[in-house]
Image 1 (cartoon, one colour):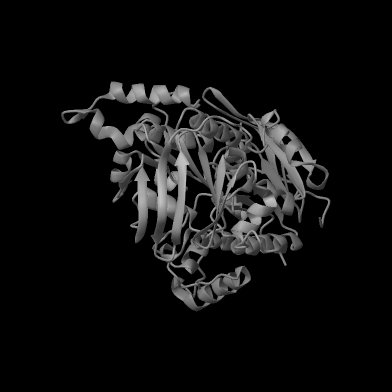
Image 2 (image 1 turned 135 degrees about the horizontal axis):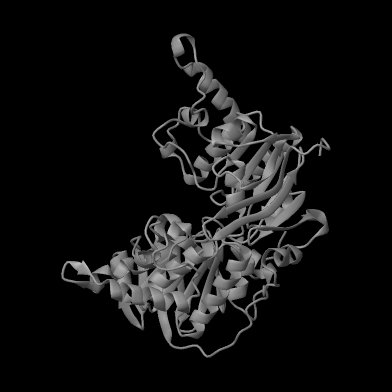
Length: 504
């Protein structure tokens, strides 16, 4: 840390909404050159605190102090002018414009008579992109970029400002491992320049890799600050949720039913080849592998989103051909997608209508949907899945990540599936809700569902699975039982190392 004066300090921040005290006397300080993690369950107050800092909300009490100067933030533009820069989890880009125009939006360099200096704009932008080591240039249209590269454009914005503090909100949610390395290098460069970093993430491995201190919120209140090097994941977790978590390996044993789904020699172009497996009623079958291993593509093929070019799918022992998602649903296959916000939910719609959306046609009486039938379905799964919402009228976009995921799961359970596929069940979900989702998956298996879980998190797949399919480069390397699998053997399998080989 390069200075003893905080780059940013929040003191006694209080924010109340009708019936809810969202922030209750929150304090936080960030030193120049420090990476300071802000952690808490979804709904703990992190987003509200950042909106106060960004001038979107005005605090009812408390102060924002930038470089020891008390400051009133009245808008995001003013926050930026004071050197407070946000890298949002939800992208806020104009997809029709170029990368350069997005990065300097509202601040385009000008020549005489107000004309845009395009030469300077592109040169400045390309200089920033060079630091980020990205594979696109200033003139690229943002809408043509992948989500991960759009995230890098958001990050590039921060490098245009003389920042005192940069807030990263779940910045790696859409990034590959290689892009994460670049991001961490950028953060390291900002540290070296004396910029304070607030890093919001649910990913413990990142928190312990790059941060100096960790501050925790719970139920809108400040619960304490820990030195990262002096604490443990268990201590941080208990501070976040007020209880210890069960993170042990799955060692439950119960009687499995008949084979619900069997796949023989399934192939789909270069995505995956000759994949075979089966899943029984009452079983959780985990799929684990690196990015590009073909896990999600298998799930999408089973759900009718991709056409296989070889192989056989059997449901209850009978061969079936799945031609579309509607066909998959009618046959009893449901998919909780990896991107719940983009693919699993209509964020502006209420909870009940989201949950009953796939079966509106079955709930109609003439041209009208029977609202009583819809509400009955919502009430059933609200109780069954312990969905925390004031009622069915709540907009689903206002729920925490964990409760949004439960809405998606409830939507598909209400269709009475034979096979439930859950892709990245806890991505972007806080540690407490993650534990609840894991428990829910195990309970669904115990109730007789055949469950397939696709995950890129080893602790997760070990915790919930009865058996684990390890994939590498589109092929099944090994299938482990929960009794025989070890972390070492699982890593070897997803790295393409056969059981008889030794690691060099």
